Length: 487
Image (tube, rainbow, N blue to C red):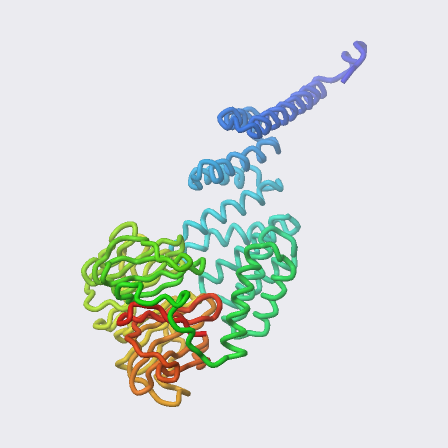
């Protein structure tokens, strides 16, 4: 700014102070911008140390600048994406919220902090602070581009708490705000699944189809395709179960006493062979050994990360480590819940054992479980031979539905030999006496499909069952050392 020399004597001292302040403020703003841009350029060429030092210098020299808010976001993002240390990102995000709450960058900081806190949650109560961040973002920045993701994550949090109506409301609101945001396919998929849990099968099928059409190249579209197909097959078409014979490719006498089956998150089939004390993953027509050696395993599950966990009376739960489970006599079921804990059932104990991610255990009242399988609601379905019924439990272990053995079948049965479920809520069982065969129920306990072994032309000792992603039923025949597929 140029002022004639004669004017300088006319400027009062207070005005001189204002002018100096203006000049210094402009210089500080210019310095902050230069420091931010310099750090950005260093980061672009992967000179991370230089970039972080430059942004930290910006925070020291111009802490109130809008560029300081951007630097805090970048520093936090670096800890999350490059260092894989979300805990180290939290101080930057706290400072961003406390010192720059009025800037648009605070919204991104709230979203990032909410994500971290949500990932760290190990029980429903732990979600409160994360949900507070998402709600605060919605209240303070109703037009921010981050809002659709915040709504979607609120929907996930309500799902984890079993509040399905609220979950659906937030998933649909996220899609209404922006049907093109990055997580829109995931919001569609979750909305569809929640609709099914709420009993709205037509809405679920319609939303899955819409997902396939709107986002055909997304991974969620592929997921929607099989979820749509199995629901149509099992609940609408309900074809008569028929045997395809030894499977895959008619292979016979190729296993060593298969006694357990499980299907992983990607649809892979796993087979535990009792004579080998080992689980195997089916790859094409070959079985490849995976997971630890465990003698006399009685239950098998695939965890969220794709790793196996096996349950035995002697060792408890065995995966990457061994988790002892007290009081096991005849274990019958194992699965991992959404909180990275395990549910364990035992045929001799009138309770279920829950092993938390921290190793702490607690029990849930339950009839002695002949078999157990997980449900997409976070709970379990338990077969009780003593009570002659299937119990559908919610994520807290509370009974929501009871289905008497043999209901709607041409003849009753007295025992469940094996129980399986799929991510869409279907439950299948191998049953015996007087009716002996396979039974398939829907998530509401309705009988969907069934077939007697005699009708199927099968003769063997079937002791394990699984549901695949095409609507097929896989049986393990321990006496003939093979698998049978029903379609």
